[in-house]
Amino acid sequence: MIHRQSPRMVLGAGGALLLIALVLGASSGAYAISTSQLWGVLRDAWQGAVQPSPEHLVFMNIRLPRLLLGVAAGCGLGMAGALMQGLFRNPLADPGLIGISSGAALAAGVTIVLGAMLWPALPRTLGSWTLVSMAFGGGFLVTLLIYVLSRSESGTRMALMLLAGIAINALAGAGLGLLSVMASDEQLRSLQFWLLGSLGGARWSGVILVGAVVLLACAASLTLAAPLNAIALGESQAALLGVDVERVKRRAIVVTAFAVGSVTATTGIIGFIGLIAPHWVRMIAGPDHRIVLPASGLLGAALVLAADTVARTAMAPAELPLGVLTAFIGVPMFLLMLRHYRNRI
Image (cartoon, rainbow, N blue to C red; front, top):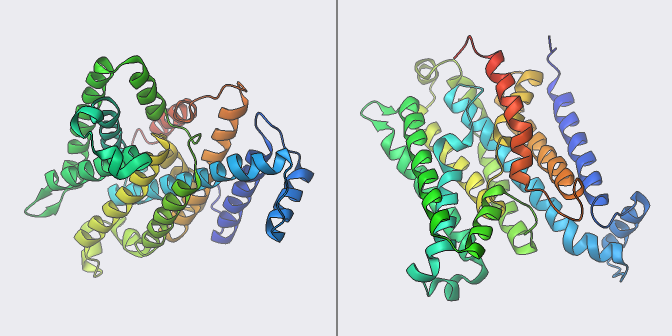
């Protein structure tokens, strides 16, 4: 039996794990950087001293943006998973239930395979942001479609949203399969690399954009902590306590769509972080969303950084797809969770 820990201890442990993951990620890779060299690079950067050393160039230009993108991605996915589990009142819920990742994947696939034929002028307008913009738009539109399909006279029904999400996810998978058949060898490689997830394409402009979106989403999610605690008692009881349940649902879905959409559009699909991180936090800290939401973000960021470090070093100089690695870790954990909750679902 796991004993519940105090909120301060849980948040402190999450911050410590994230710090350890950052240090390991910064020092590990095809070009190893020792701890003393790492502190030296950070000190020089803080003082504004430009050093031409290899470790300085590798860390500042390649590794640091990758680490910060991993923090933003993990934090966004972990927080979104906590929101969805609170909204569905189910510890097995995941942001993928509302179709964000599948919608982004389908839009990216259409852009990669058919973009030159359908929108020849788009790259001239958006440049290198074409794929990211289309993927984010696809994820948001699919989420909006699922939300509309789940509406009824009595409000948003979460069971309908789940069924609509399953159907749309299956349709997106079929569309991606068709695009894979139609794609050329080069297009197929680009599509598969994007679908398997990676932090390898990190660049400062993308890090700043995703970081800003995730930061705003996390701030917005914290305002939903108290209403989600009330909804955990049941929607009727929450309404009696003065909670506008429909408004909370809309805000939670929009916040999740922005966070996961921006992350997926930049990194590709990174699965199971939004499922595992909130579940572990709930096991340790309990169901209070005032603790679950920030702690899930911290743990999600630490998990993504740890997985990315393994992906970069396990078969160096080759790199494992990050989404594949998180699936290998996440699927056994999901099955254990199913076994634990088999009498409750």
